[in-house]
Image 1 (cartoon, rainbow, N blue to C red):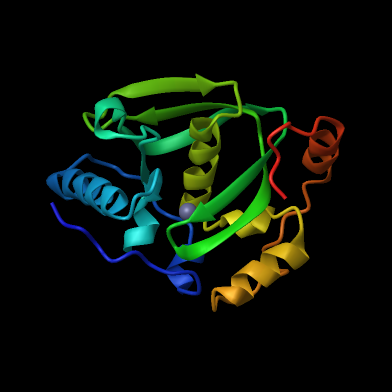
Image 2: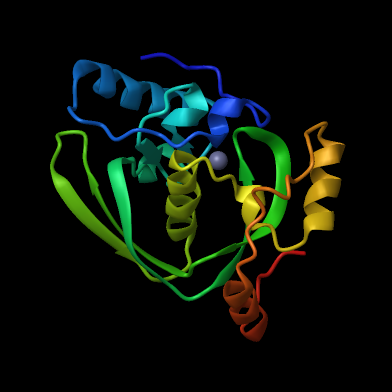
Length: 194
Ligand code: ZN
C-alpha cells in the first residue's frame, strides 16, 4: 500500500496504449491498492494505472463524497460495449494539476470489465452522472487519450493549460466529435459550466 507519484501531462507514457492484464497476480493486486491509496490521497474520483507509471489496462473509480458513501470500483481489462447520447462535462485530471475545461462525453455508457477477483461484471449508467463520465475519462487513459483531446473550446483549454504552466492542446490528438458537439448544443444541460 503506497501513495505513488502521479505522472504529469507531458510524460510520453501517458500517450501509450496500455496492455491487457493476463493474470490477476499479486503485482496486479498491489497495483490496484496503490491506485486507491494514490487516488484518495489526491482527493480524486478516478485514477488509471498509466497515471502511476504502469501501462496496464486497470483503473479505479470512487465517486463517493465522504467515507460513509465510499464506493470503490475496480475495472480490469474494461471494454465499453455501448455509448449513447451526448453531454458537456467540466473536467480535470490528476495528471493536470488544477486545469479544468469543458469536454464532450457520452451521456450513457455500458462497460464490461473484470473485478479484482477476476470475475466479469457489466455496469450501465444512463444518467450522464459523474460516474458515467469518470468511466469514459479513465478508460481513455488506457488508450493514451486525455480529457483535453475532447475539449469543446480549444482556445479556452489552451488558456487554462498555459495558466497552469502546462503544454497547450496538441492538434495531433484533438478529437473532432462533430456529432457529439451537435447533440450537446441541441440539448444544453441546465448546469452547463462555461
Ligand atoms: Zn485523468
